Image 1: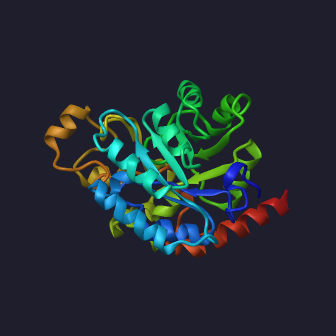
Image 2: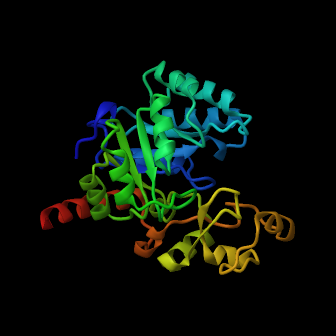
Image 3: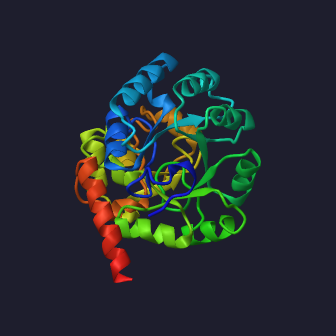
Amino acid sequence: MPVPHSLSGRLRMPVVAAPMFLVSGPELVVESCRAGVLGSFPALNQRTTEGLREWLRQIDGELTDADAPYAVNLIVHPTNARLRADLEVVVEHKVPVVITSLGAVPDVVDAVHSYGGLVLHDVTTLRHAQKAAEAGVDGLILVSAGAGGHAGTINPFALMATVRPWFDGIIALAGSITTGADVLAARALGADLAYLGTRFIATAESSAPEGYTQQILEAGAGDIVYTPAVSSIPANFLAASLAAAGVDPASVPDPMHLGSEQEFKAWRDIWSAGHGVAGIHDVPSVAQLVDRLAAEYDEAKARL
């Protein structure tokens, strides 16, 4: 299962455990890397830049050269007042991979490249992919229809067909990938990596509350609501968590009214997930999950 560039040979499976707000912490990252997949977390899961520094010290202290690399997700939008300070800490620790979101900034790319790190940028459209490529990123994360969180609306087959012909860097494909067979399908489409988020929420090392995990186990693809109402950017959420917050999943109100009339916090109380919930029925450890993904990958390849 070769992966190009400096990730080659360092991953047991061509899989990224995607960074998830309020879900991905050091334990999930470390266990993912030990299992042989690229673990990651959002910098903003720590409330302060100093907290981010402490997490990086912890992760660096627990991982060895035998483990897979890890990634930190930076929100590079101008509204993130912590970006520059967090970036300095990332450079200080020489984080192997940086995942950027909400904007592709050449200065950020240059800073990560200064110590030999890789930059992967998540995109949902051709225009965003082209702008990220112009900024010099090493790879693109194609967030297709059905992915959890801030997902796009383009079918993964179409998104791959739109981007792969002109982009020769690393491509990670996101969108309803939960099994090893799904990972093989992503590779068959031309992706180098499969980007799994929802599947890793339902693991023993996840920081997700028990209720969040239970809703994922009980949900089907039809129980996912795609709306901009919760965080102003279209994203996929569990209908049951919307209902628990007093919001009718069949008629999600305008963001202005939702924020003023309902006592909730986006992501903390209204939980994100992708269509991949359809294939999630248990809560294994990360090590057990990666073992299963590897076996399913090999079985699917043999069937072909």
